[in-house]
Amino acid sequence: MTPQSDEDEVWRQIVASFNDTAVRDSADQPWPDSENLPSEPPRRVVKQSDEDERPPAEELADADTDTEQADPDDEGHYVPPPPPPLPKTDTTTKIAWLALFGGPAYLLLSAALNWQLQGWMLFTAVAAFIGGFVALVVRMGDGPPNDSGWDDGAVI
Image 1 (cartoon, helix red, strand yellow):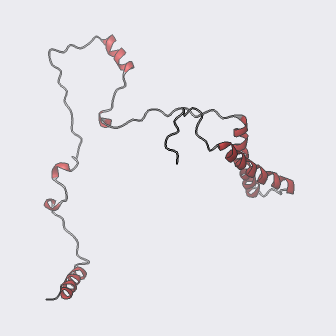
Image 2: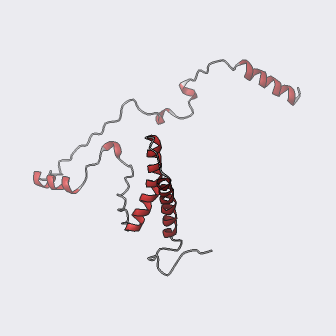
Image 3: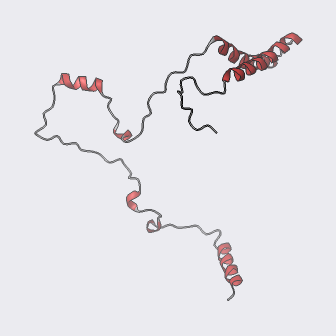
């Protein structure tokens, strides 16, 4: 038998079994049964030893306010810290953002409502968009932050 005839035979078998349904036995699974998800979550039983004494109700109330109660379903999940507040922007930046979005918004609104625009209104909206964009790009800055210290890291 030549290698070509082996490939032809394999190809004929593939084509012949194209419409056959695959029946997969549980023994043919690509993972062990121990890794299958259970039908219901496991229950935990916490036994308290006789040596441990329960604290008074007042201490329990204080403990509840000091620490958060963890949900047993969320055990082991990472909860990121709250993000830092956004930096405060100055008036010039706020006006630039307003012009950047306000010009096109005015043009879209006037087109949607079929308003008749005079030439100076159209010019003002387009100029506001371009001016806002240019102002934001110019104010971006391309240097390192002022509080980075003497070491700028790897500078190429």
